[in-house]
Amino acid sequence: MKLELGYIPITNIEFAERSYVEGSTLYVSKEELSDVLLQDENISSVSFAIALPGDKTRITPVKDVIEPRVKVEGKGGMFPGVLSKVDIVGSGRTHVLKGAAVVTTGKIVGFQEGIIDMSGPGAEYTPFSKTCNLVLVITPKEGVVQHEHEHTVRMAGLRAAAYLGELARELEPETIETYEFLPLLESIERYPDLPRVGYVKMLQSQGLLHDTYVYGVDAKRTLPTLISPTEVMDGAIISGNCVSACDKNPTYVHQNNPIVHDLFKRHGKDLNFCAMIITNENVYLADKIRSSDRTAEICGYLKLDGVIISEEGFGNPDTDLMMNCRKISDKGIKTVVITDEYAGRDGSSQSLADADPSCDALVTGGNANEVITLPKMDKVIGTEAYVGIIAGGWDKNKAEDGTIQVELQAITGATSEVGFGYLSAR
Amino acid sequence: MVKEIERAGIPVVHICTITPISLTVGANRIVPAVAIPYPLGDPALSKDEEKQQRRKIVKTALKALSTEVSDQTVFDVE
Image (cartoon, rainbow over all chains, first blue to last red; front, side):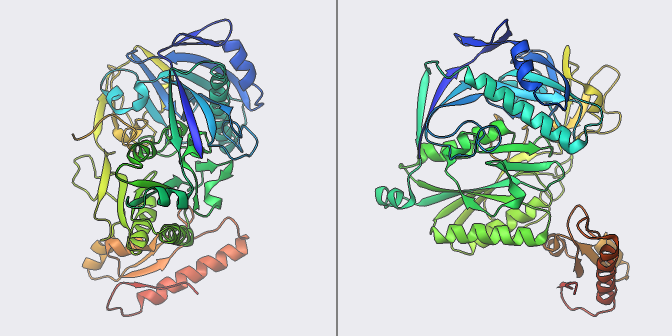
């Protein structure tokens, strides 16, 4: 599969009478976008706000972040099986409004939603302080139950991203990047001397508002399978997650997975990136065993030399991570896992809920329990009413002067387990 | 908690869903539970069936408590 990503840089968003892109400014018509979103009869009202890098603005509680993209050539449309018809995506050309993002907020769905600060110390921890954000504040109708509410805000975010992405259809991209994912045999023929490297991407699928969808299918009802990374760039995987904000993968991160992009950079040079496998993280032990068995079987069947495994979330998925690591290692394949840590506020507790001797190479996204003080902001989009109850917050964590103390856990993307962030130890 | 109570000389059986974690942290008697969100229940079953299932798990746990073990042991529910 060969996919061209055409980037149209966006450095500003403004409201206007109609929606269009001129230069690097994205103009958005609130009326037009409202009409698109209010198709959903569970929405009582939606309002819009703009948050730009450097603004003294806080967005909370954040549900999802999505990048506006549009398919301009090749099969399928954006978010196949969810917004567009089910069809294989990942080939042709896709245009991207690079630098823009849709952020969904409003009344809380679950207790694991996040905070995005556009400036100050919190902004260092969230990658979405550097994007120009169009924020949707969604109010559901009375009587809409929790799982319907989650579905409603998830779909609203995707619809808004697809609507904005459509504005890029006729534009001339400033840069074009080409990603080619070859059939396995061809890849091995072309690079016979390079080590075969695969990527195992674990998807959060614990249920009860902790879900991920692949071509519209709930990932907990799937067996591990091969997928082209270009399909994922085209929105084949979306987040339906109210998992801890710091280490879940918002839809934006699926679209822009740094592991995939870095592997492509080295593909054909010092490694052969020839497999991407998606697997799940379910709540039954039998499912964990079955999925890790299948993942390892696929890796063994492909005779990979090395595998990178990324986790999503923490706690019991640490067991899925260790099972994947051990079973893939048992096939004689080298493994590296990427996770984050819940090592207590002083960092002295055990970092993961599970461990295995085969897991001897690990990259961490940081300690999610570390406490940070966030200053009072001039503007809050959404509401600070929930900062004491979201995961990473605690009762009375907001001081009289308006400062808020939270664990990094509460900050969207702070300890990303695919490395989608800007902080590092180097 | 399992280890501290055992340290006080009282045998403990750990009923939990993710038995590998229980093995990692060092429980000696382990009984598998149903699922993480509902360790001793199952919303897919009727109330009567659920009660039967819970009884089976508790009986297995009691049997485990009265069984001598020399190593970490997982007692499967029949």
